[in-house]
Length: 143
Image 1: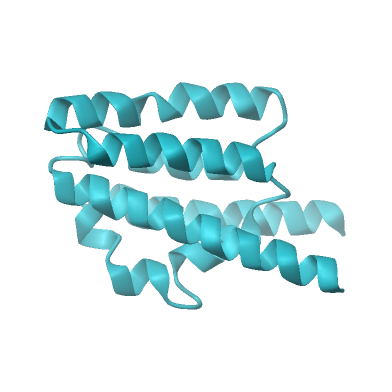
Image 2 (image 1 turned 180 degrees about the vertical axis):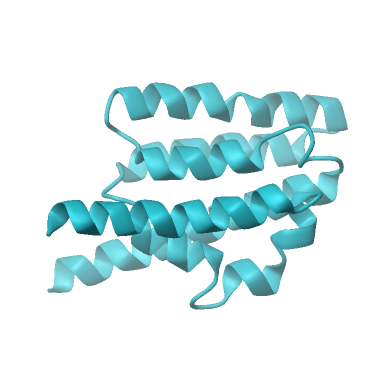
């Protein structure tokens, strides 16, 4: 049963990764409507990642926000690109869901991030994943 659930979670995240991979840029696919509303990408990801250390998730989000606030596009990208090895390390330490890492790898690529708008789209996705994860955590505690 647990294995089937893990496989289903992986397939759901993989589907979102495929949509991102087919897009020319992040802003094209990570629109506010697609990521923010219930049933959108952010909520779907939040519901399909295994328990992740909330501190780790917040740390990654903080790095994304720093990237967003940089003055030069190159500096923003360089900061954002550091998320990939940070998450790889966390996956290796079993602090981060490998599915979330796959999603991040799909998003953080030079060919997907061509403008500040793409960075903003990624940061919004990450912020909304964080929000829906917090909601999911609170709902699980009430059960």
